[in-house]
Length: 79
Image (cartoon, rainbow, N blue to C red; front, side, top):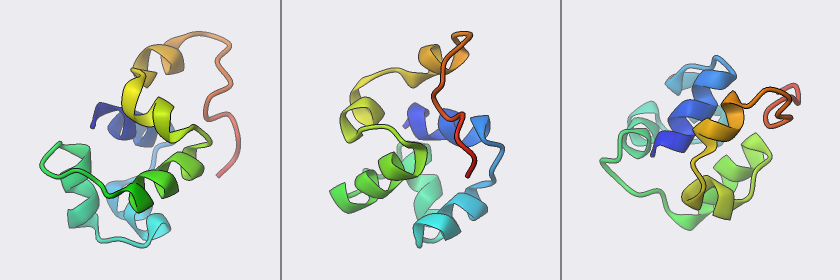
């Protein structure tokens, strides 16, 4: 899932750090990020809340383009 990989890179967190924040293993998170497994809805909700985006945006919008736009406030909050 490119969006979660891109979002994680934007805030400069490791897979392990993000997985810990979400309460899952790094291996499990990695599988979601690389498309080897689909996260259940509970995890999608946690990820969306973590980044301050909707689940719909997370799964249906290419957030890479939004993040790259100058002036985007996506992820400007402090984590």
